Every structure is written in structure tokens, then in C-alpha cells.
Image 1 (cartoon, rainbow, N blue to C red):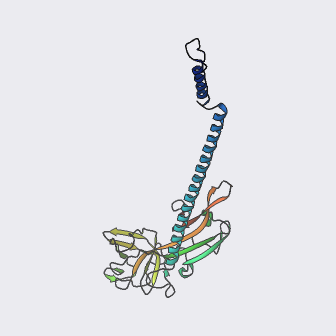
Image 2: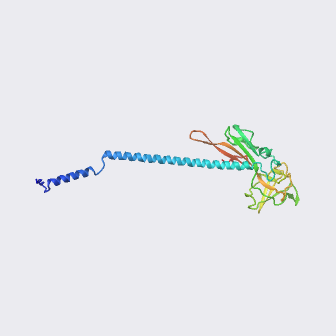
Image 3: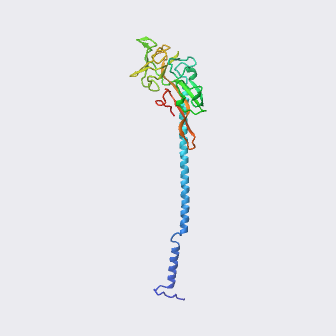
Length: 293
């Protein structure tokens, strides 16, 4: 057998060659080259960009779904409100509107014929021009209704009805000019008694009904005394003898106008942003009593 020469450092040439080969191998596999590193970074950036794009898409989709849910919720609320008012239109207590029309005791009422205006529709044919005209005292110039859209007027007695505590009387004798004494005991009606002076009210039994303007309201424990003097009505006298045992009910008179109006906002394309509005009584002052969007 041939023996390899010994290096000057006392190490055999074979061992030295093996150590150099191992060192060279470790050097080749100890890290990435510059090209490999650039490729890895590029692939990582592509993956990150894809993840960001997916996240952004999911976020936009989530925001769109939330916006659509809000729109649907608002639409359901609006339609429920309108449907409730439509069902109530013409309500005046136990007497049907087709069997007995109420006496209109106030000249300032938003109607001169409750039977024909209990449910009425109009079309906005031009700026501030409705056909047929809106209710009395409703000023179209205070409402930016969209031309070509429709409006709906609904008039009715509130579902919150209150019984009388005593018949309409003066000095313990029946008198149609006497105050209306209403029982406001909590729980006796679906809502609390909230009528104030200058509101409109209905008093009715199964024989007839009157719509008038309230001229005074005095409240004590479980009782409200309502005045209906001639100072705000054509007559301070009611049209019927209203008592406790004849089914008499007292309620607020409501007149709501629904229309599509300009909100004053614009979308990103510059188009008008419109909304459904409801204007309740009193109509006259859009600052103190603005329409509800």
C-alpha cells in the first residue's frame, strides 16, 4: 500500500484534502445567494400584496353589506310608520267616517272636508306646485320636494284615546260650552296625555264628533281640563252632548304629510341625495317644527 506523504504541519495529505472538501461543502450550503434572496423577497411581497387586496375587498364588502342593512332597516321603519298612519286615516273614535262626518269647529284646521282629506295624494308637478294642493297652512316653499315625485297626506285621530271623567257641563248642568274633563290616569290609554294649548283635538261618541283647537289645558292628578273657547274656534259650543257613559273618547287630531325631499347633500357623482320626510302639525314653522327625515 502506498502511503501519502505527511504535510510539514504533521497532518497527512489525505486528511487535509478531506477537511478542505468539507469546508467547501459547508460554505456552499451555509446561506442564500443574492439572487435567491431577491427572488424570496419578491415572492413574499407578492403574497403580502395579495393578502392586502383580499383584506381590502372583504372590508369593502362588509361595509357595503352594513350600508345595505341600514337602508333596509330605515325603509322598513318608514314603511311601518306610513302603514300605521294609512290604517288610522279617518279614525275618529267609535263613529265611522262614512256614517258621520265631524263638525270642524276651527277655521285653522288643515282641512275643510275631513272625509276627502283623511287620505289624499299629490304629485309635485313643479317647484312649490302640488296637484292637488297640499293641506291648508302647509307651505311647499318650506319643503324641497322632488319634482315628479308623489306626496301623501294622512289625517286621523290618535290611537291614544282618553275617556271623560264627567259629562261636558257648567255648574253641574249639561252645557256644550263647558270644559272637557279628561281622565288621564296612567295606563288608561296607550300613551301619556301630552296635548297642549293650540293643539288640535277630536271629541267623539258613537253619534258624532267635533274637531277643534285647544285653547287651554289645566292638568292635575290623573285629570286634564281642556278648553275650546270661541277665541280660536268658530264656536265655543260643541255639536253634541258628550257624556261619560255614551262611549265618548278624546284624542289628538293628527295630519301627517309624507314626501320625498332634497336633503341638500350630493353624492360623489354630483347627484341629489333625497330622503323620505314626514311633516306633522303644526306646519307653519319649519324651524320650531321641522320635518322628520
